[in-house]
Structure formats: C-alpha cells, structure tokens
Length: 99
Image 1 (cartoon, rainbow, N blue to C red):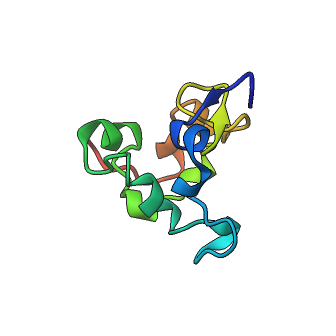
Image 2 (spheres, rainbow, N blue to C red):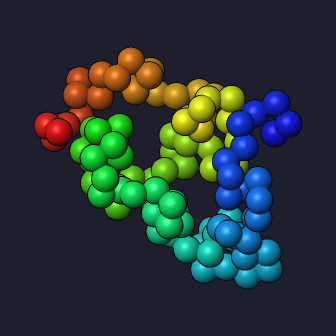
C-alpha cells in the first residue's frame, strides 16, 4: 500500500468497516458493503449517478470494481477491470438508464 493512494477510512481506522473478532458479514465487515460505503458516498447525488450510469447503488457491490483499501488509480479502481467498463461501453451488454 505504500506506493498507492490510500482510501482515507482504511488509512485511518480499520474499525470503521471491520470488526476484528466478530462481524455480521463476510471478511469481518460490520455491515453490508453498500451500507458501509454509503456512510461517506452519496449514492443519491448526481455525480454518483452519472459515474455509475444511473444504476441503483443498492444492487451494486462496490468492491467488484473498487479496492476499498488502496489503489494506484485515483478512483480506487482495481488493477484489472472489465474491458467494456474501461472503455465505458456498458450499454453493449447492459441496459443503461439515461441520466
């Protein structure tokens, strides 16, 4: 993580997201991923909707695309991303709602 951008919650306090001994979710998460991410990220805001092609945030798994701890990418994308996503051509396979 030393050479990567650190996600501020992960850089400051692991307990923001994780229970060290017992948690209700896999990977010792304190809550569902959407609920944890939603504490800081406004899924109802226009910027979020535009960046996520107006897909309802509650059906997404944030960690599918983003690394919650650190990344070389400023938006914390994982090193390997789905090629159509990288090319922003989601509508080739998915129904995308207009913004």
